[in-house]
Length: 166
Length: 459
Image (cartoon, rainbow over all chains, first blue to last red; front, side, top):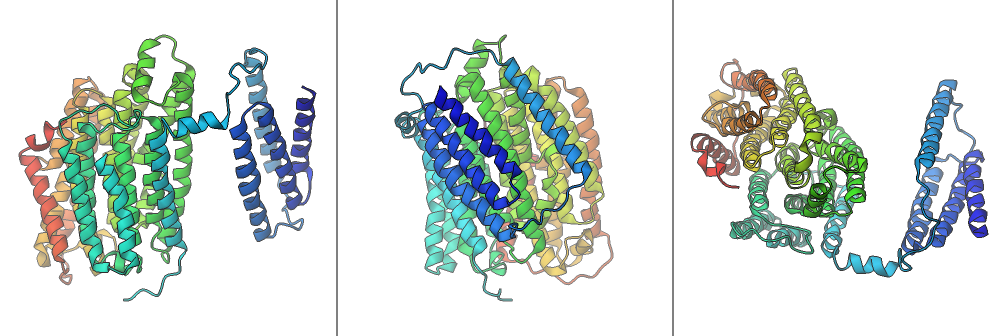
């Protein structure tokens, strides 16, 4: 339990650092750390698959994409435009609404049984694999069509055309 | 299943043909492949198989009838593509392949028996369409259409997926029969999650068919995309969307229809009014067709609002009439646009003097879209309205009739321009493929209009 509180503290700390750091690149680096603490949370909850996916997809792929975009747009300097007070006001209202909703949701939540793993193999990759290659084999295979079509399309849109003949 | 396999393998063959520069073989191979797929689909007719692949797909008569309609529409549209894609760029094989991938997604959407398959089918179809909308890389309107369609489509997919997740959370299953049984077992204690899920799925599906509060992408995307792709979107894709909608609601959510019928009723009325009244003000024929397609989505929704045993048949008839009439309209538009260089109504001035055949087929198409008797469109509207009346939706039918009258004005504008406006345009050259497609479609429109038994008793 102490481990949970320590990790939770780190999550909140890094999340705050994301929004308070002036340099966008630092923000992204802190965001990576935040996601890493989430991965530890998933492991603590026995959700192996989610932990791995979170590690690979969010920390790996998406964060690298963020970094690339920030570097491409050259946001490295403190060129962030000063926001008008109206935008700030709207932001405060939006954030407060979210807070109210979250508090209400937490209050409305019935207190469940204390977290005890009833099914020891819940959330393991092995079970997921069995379902995926058994009952959900057809959707899994048909998804390949989706990826293939998207790949053909990406190449099609990215290749340079020769000048069109009359 | 064979149909799906053939339509999935066919684009790969086409890509290989493109790799080996067999340009001449592309269209014949595609058409032959699609006809084979059609043959395999029709061979399944009559035996109602149980859901296959752990309940993922079910090829019943409903799926076969709509698959046949979409495959035939695709064949007709691809016949119009002769020399069309070559003008855009050299990658003709890829265009055919992506269209066929889209069709594979459509087939999945028409035969799903599990919400995961519905989602994957919609995604295969949509992703291919985002690409197709943007294939004119140097054309600003086409780029805009692709980006707009992609962003809006991604949002609507989010709604759909969220809806599916909530329904799964409430009922504990993705399977259509299981969800239905769950509703029947717990008639009193249906989770609010479930209702939210239904509403979110309505949002996602209404977006895909372009119904009213979610129609904002339609005019720009239809206008910006290449005309042939617009024809594909407004016929095959719309048919698939409404069929998937109908399959979901008639098998799954039918027992709690009192919850969602009012929602859909409002959506239908809004769709009719927005589609028809905005179409009145259009100067571009292509944009007018986009708005008219919105209003037709409204008529198609009638079958779901007034769900009964003949709904599937009404949708099939209406979708057939609408698809073939739209193919004529877009085919003629492609030819006229090549000649006149514009999509406006003025491009059609005096067309009847030099091209009586084109003018005649377009007239048939417009009459069918407006729902004049002796055309297929009238039969479609008749089935829709009588279905709605049998469920005592009198107000809806009155509104629909008013809208049908409004629509006559803008459909007849083209006819008036072609026959009565004085202008001396040069003759439009009509390639033989076009003659075949236009002639076939016009003939089918009239035959179904005169002899509706051909399609009315199918499903």
